[in-house]
Length: 155
Image 1 (cartoon, rainbow, N blue to C red):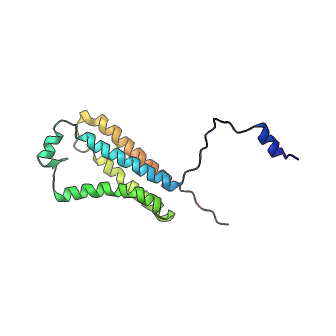
Image 2 (image 1 turned 120 degrees about the vertical axis):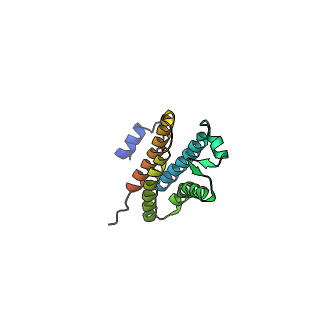
Image 3 (image 1 turned 60 degrees about the vertical axis):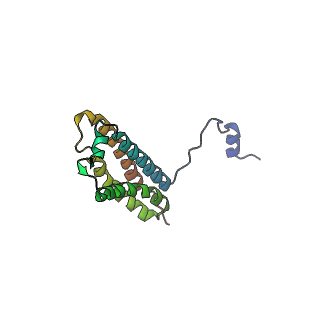
């Protein structure tokens, strides 16, 4: 004997064109967002070299008005290493620590992204406006994903 549910299921078979949309773990969303952020940062830095005179300034020992030194390069390394490590940490840290770490690091990186506009000329405002805007949007996604991390309800 058929139940009403099975009768309905036979009457309305699943569409062959319907796509399955599985719920993604927060960890995977965060790792993907940090990876996207890193790709963008790398490309923004790379395309920065296309600005007239940038290569000459670097050859002259200056980056962003700062003298190139081991200290400066170490600071740049740390600035890039942290979001790179966040890809790994987002997939491996326990949920409570993961959430807090993502909230703190993403919050700290918003002013770091905005700092990139310092010293630029108005003719590059569109470029930096777009790139910083997208970077901040990705960081906002990270903040929202970490902030709204689903809670496990115990009964």
